[in-house]
Image 1: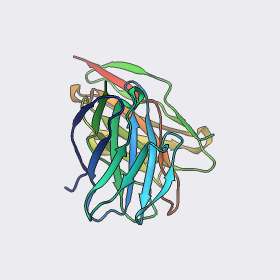
Image 2 (image 1 turned 45 degrees about the horizontal axis):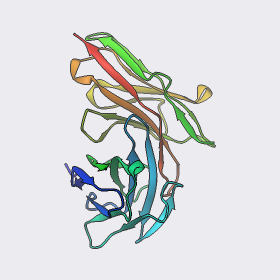
Image 3 (image 1 turned 30 degrees about the vertical axis):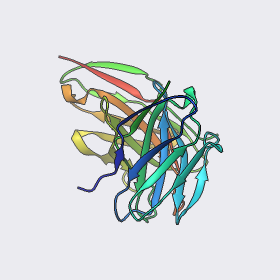
Image 4 (image 1 turned 60 degrees about the vertical axis):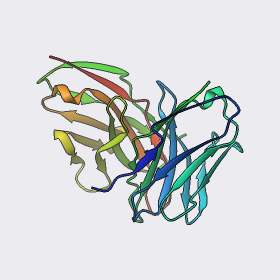
Length: 114
Length: 115
């Protein structure tokens, strides 16, 4: 069964460093998403991406964040200068081109900012 | 404002007992409705979804959920809980139509199962 994959599973970084989180969505999906979950809190939407551009973003997704689909398979989230409060689990999701908003999630990347 | 409320933060049930996890939503129109499960250290797995039609939907692992429009609720149920059901459960809503819309999640309910 096709699935969304994410790498790395855990990333530790120093405050102020840049990190790139990687995702490989399901191959025939065209809508891509990033969500995050701060420890003990709910899953929050960051950004959606379609047709090589951002289609929606939340207040959390400020200028420190960017997304890219550098090739036909990867979808990345970059945080330019990490802050302590960026420590969270980051989930990538994708969905097919249908009228239904059924999103498939990856296993997540746990980001720890020290 | 759009929101999802899961009023129970933590529920403990005995193995073999029935389970109901509550979910209420606030949304401009009837959204698509989802339940996801997250085992420790794992990602989010879709349990079931409601798009339209029969308001009682069946999912994986023996779970079902009932959509009640009048109550803006989408409660998750299982007649007999197994120890492997211990996990965190998230209710989510999403926009209808062909939009790219994001999902809005509740805060989750952690389920513990007593032997």
